[in-house]
Length: 167
Image 1: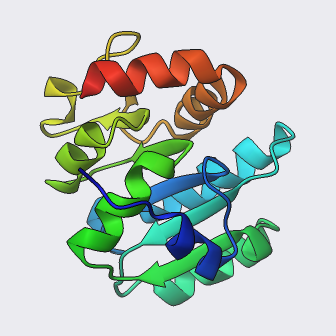
Image 2 (image 1 turned 90 degrees about the vertical axis):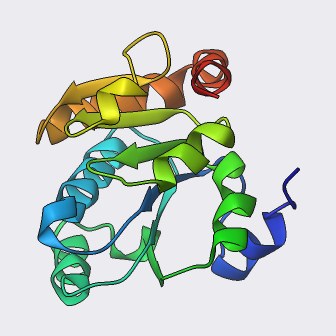
Image 3 (image 1 turned 30 degrees about the vertical axis):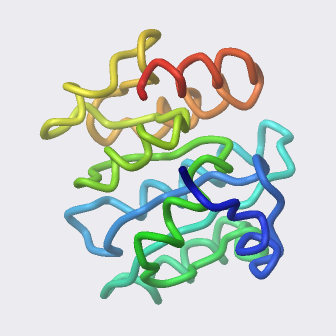
């Protein structure tokens, strides 16, 4: 059982199922810069969505500048570190979760039945299999990650089925 995170999203100016979600440290090893690029590309497909980046780290200023340079600063929300309750409340409301290199939070995403686009790195391919439990793309293939996000955004029944399958 999870509490409804709609109120938490309203505080951020975000509507349920109208945002991409990244959960992780804002450090180079986690590749959050790829997520900003992915988001900018997905917006070029015509989707009126936002990006929530939940986490903190040394790259915050660099990522904010990158979002500005790519023209997505008004649609990108750096909400900082959030506790487990906050995260599990909003995860089921994400249109897509982007996972370049996520730790245990990826298991919470799966339990929340959110569609996942993940890099094939570390253990992520044990959870995410393209067309079976989400979309798995090669490591650092951010353009392919954007295409995977587009697949989910364009086909909500496919997104739902992948979310259910990953759970």
